Image (cartoon, rainbow, N blue to C red):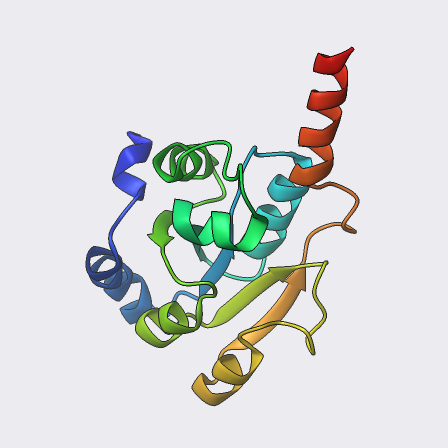
Amino acid sequence: MDTSKKILGRDALKQALEPHRKRGEKIVLANGCFDLLHAGHIRYLQGARAEGDILVVAVNSDSSTESLKGPGRPVLPERGRAALVAALSSVDFVVIFPEPNVESLLQDLRPNVHAKGTDYTPETVPERSASARLGIRVAIVGDPKTHSTRDLLANIRKRADG
């Protein structure tokens, strides 16, 4: 499959999800920056996929990634990060979003489950109030947070310096 067909705008994604919703399939939304894909990301997305039938991954735009992660980030542009995520077999659809969190996507897409990584608890998920109001279950998935892009970049820089 041409993975670029998995990357959709918000309106096209809403339309693409309708047949799945009508069939009663459980839709899961996961999100993140995914700047330099690593094993922790893969395990997070596999855990998210296990929560339902259709996995939608929201990838932070370049501007929201820089706002969240600081100057010099992202390393890879948003379309490249979206393409990497879309290439994963566990991922059905990808959408790029400019907001600092996915509250508006939860409102627009109405997934059954909002999956977050183990660096969160149910109490610290930024969108927990919106999820509760919309009847969306929050699932904490993936392996313990022992991988990070920040650490990976630091290791690359250290090796490059000598």
